[in-house]
Amino acid sequence: MNKPIEFRLRDETHSITNSWEKLSPETFEYLFSLLMQMAAGQLAPAMVRILYVCDVLGINYRKIKDPAAVENINKLAYQVTFPISIVYPDNNAVLSELPPDLRDMARKVPPDRLPQSAMTKYLQRLEYHFVIDNCFCAQLIPAISVGGKTLPGYAVNTEFDNLTCNLTALQYIEAKQLIGRSKDTLPLMASILYHPHPYDSLSAHKAAASFAELPEQTLLAIAFNFQSFTNYLFTKTHFSLLTKGKDEKKSPIATGALESLYNMSQDGLGDMNTVSQMNIIQYLTVLRKKTIEFVKSLSQAEKKLTEIEKITGLPLSIIKQIV
Image (tube, rainbow, N blue to C red; front, side):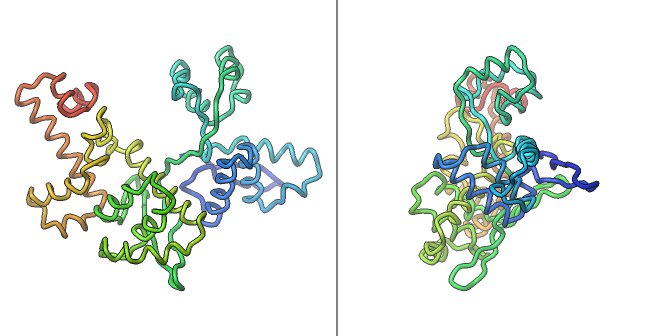
């Protein structure tokens, strides 16, 4: 997680949040609106950072007349790294040649502002583009108002280096299946994610019509928050094992998720209703355990590593760690 940006002003220390996880719901809403303007080509990435800093400090950027003050704001803005990433050709292939610390910096800081070297000068000549960083572990829209009612959303907690989330397995699966679909499905995703427990698919589907009355930007923000949490789960935690397969069809998360619930029920973990209401972290833990056990069983059956790779789709490096 990025550290806050601290600075001194009139003998007082101030700080600016530099991570998604520490944003307030109000600041997230404002920043998301800026990012949507950037995605539409209406706002430059640098201006997104500047307006974010000004919002945190309670300053109207357009009313600043002092050139020194403008320069100070710009300096602070360039230290804001969390909401935007930089992508170079071939999925950042050129960055593999950089030291790890500089590699991470190059994904966040424009090349003309990196420590100057032959490599960073080369980066300046490449075509690169800015993208929204959609990988974080937080619930930044904890409640929404629908039909005159305030509905609490799912909760995510990472305190004490432990991850918990109260989404149910079926709730998570049904919402995840809607990621990347058309905007027409956004009300349904929101209805699923803000459905009270116990979760019920039919009830969530019926309630989706009322969620369609929400502003489109609110629905987009809900989807963005959920997708970012999903990205975090499968890139920043040990659950990444579940998406390491070269063939996505072999991943229990990519496809066949509902079938995996049925298989768990068949394994004696409870009837379908019990398994579908299983906590998402517990569900993923069971899936990961089953994946590891399957790899080990193939190894015990004296399958070669290359055969295990072909059967499971997992890379050899992961298989070697397991066996």
